[in-house]
Image 1 (spheres, one colour):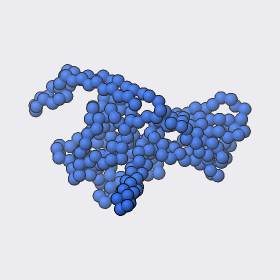
Image 2: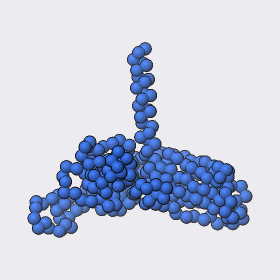
Image 3: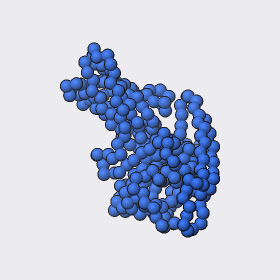
Image 4: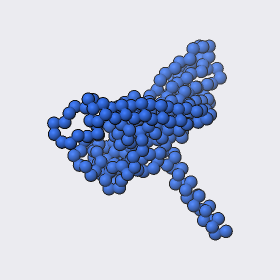
Amino acid sequence: MPSRIFRSLFLFAFIATALPAYAQQTGVIVGKVADSGGGVLPGVTVEARAAVLPVPRVTTTGVNGEYRLVALPPGTYTLTFVLAGMQNVTRQAEVQLGQDTTVDATLGIQGVTEAVEVTATATMIEKESATIKSGVSSTQINALPVGQEYRNLLKLIPAVQYSQDSVRGPSAGGSGQDNIYQFDGVNVTLPRFGTLAADPSTHDVAQATTVRGGARAVDFDRSGGFSIDTISKSGTNRFTGEVSFQFQNANMTAPLDDGSASRYEQDRTWITASVG
């Protein structure tokens, strides 16, 4: 009996600690729906569909015409706004990890058959916060010349500065010693150094979000390092796969005037395959 109670308490503690970490690995879509005259529209059905969702997510606007879809896996979403007597409207939105994506809609009187489709993208800067955020999707990661290691994602962070210090992490407006790295909500930072204690592959990353300038470093007088959070690739009930080939030729790198040769001056190839 005591062992059963202990297992129950352990399971409860595990769930309690896992839920906040899971919540951080999603994004949010918020917005406001109005008519063509500018009046707010309550009771509008808002449906969100995406390949990363097994079933659509549905909500309705409140009395002030606002809606909020929370805990959405990062990805590209199609939103449909439906209200009796009004025309249906669709919007495209890119949900970023740990960020709010604002998608507003204006509904006209029914009778106009065409659907208005607008692409909404996440902004680099949030107007409601002093935090400097940036996010990149797997499409962007695959399109850019990023290396094979997790630490290569640092090259996508705006204003990251190269440091001669080989002990501490790179600087982004503050001390590189205070950088924070997260992978699926797990902190993979080497304490006191601001560098990585683990190095997952960039091929496993679906999206990355960075906060730089020490915006969350209250204890460091807002002068700490950057925070980078990533989420791994996942799927639903649809089988998907990917095969990629990358190569590097020594002639792609200019010769060094001094110092020792690096691995970037070597001929290398990579073949990566995944299925899920």
